Each structure stands twice: as C-alpha cells, then as structure tokens.
Image (spheres, rainbow, N blue to C red):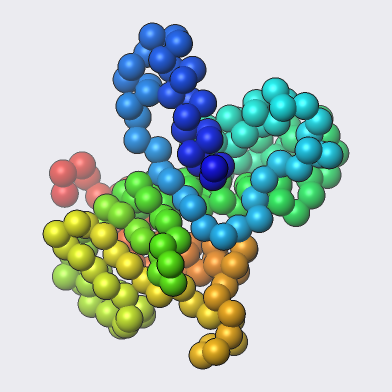
Length: 187
C-alpha cells in the first residue's frame, strides 16, 4: 500500500470517528511515483510515533509547514536519513501539484498520469513543444507523459529525486501554478 493511500485511509477513519463527513470527503492530491520515501523503523521507533509523523507530513500545506515538520523530526529523532528527506521532497511536490489543480500524479506503466488536466491553448502549445510524446485526453481530463530516461535513449527510467525534479519542472512549465494562484477565482 502506498504512503498516500495509507495516510488517506487513516485520515478518513479519524474523520469518520469524529463524525466529520466533510473532512472525510476533502480531495487530497495523490502522488504515486517510484521514490524511496518513508520513515525508517530505526529512525522513528514505534508504529504510533511513525503514524503521527506521517500524518504531520501529509497535512502540510506550504513551505513553512514542511520546514516545521522537518525541524520537529530533527529535534525529536536526530538528522533524518535520505528516505525521510525524500518524503519531504514528495510533500513539497504534493503542495505544488495541488496548487496546480492536480489530484493525481501517478506512474502508470512507462508513463506518468496527471489529472485532472484542462489546458488553455497556450499551455497545450507549450506541452507539445516541451513534451512532444505526451498524450492529452480531453474527455477524461488526463495527461500521459512518457517517463524520461537517464542518459537518453536506452537509459533506465528516472527514479527517486531525479524523477521528482522532472515532475516538478513539468508541473511548473505546463500548469503554471504561480499564475494560477494569481488568477481570480473563476478566471
């Protein structure tokens, strides 16, 4: 089970127990990419403490929250190992993807699926220029982009932070989350 699904299920169960159906229905941005991002057992001992840490990281909504969660982990358990740094990078990417209006960024075979996707003409042109082999399915509001390979043709597909950086660059270039925030609602 992926980290996102795990955290979502726990969040829904907690909201249900508290009798808060609206919180259970809040859409969360799902990121499922081949990234070694987790909290190791030897870094945070105890299932309950790890779960609290995962919930804290899953609830971040901006850079300040991410830094606070990282500092809290460092203060309690010492310098985080690489998988925790990767987890923070995924949290940072999730915030970016959410600000771009995406609900899913998921590895699907040799492609990464971004959804929901509605592109203006200028965004569609930029997509064709920067990611020519991508497929935009307007009917399903889905964008499929081939996973890039390290070292070009014949190389291995990108993984971990290299893949996350590539996804970040794509979201910034195509979906323009900064411009989206500046645009008035409904515009």
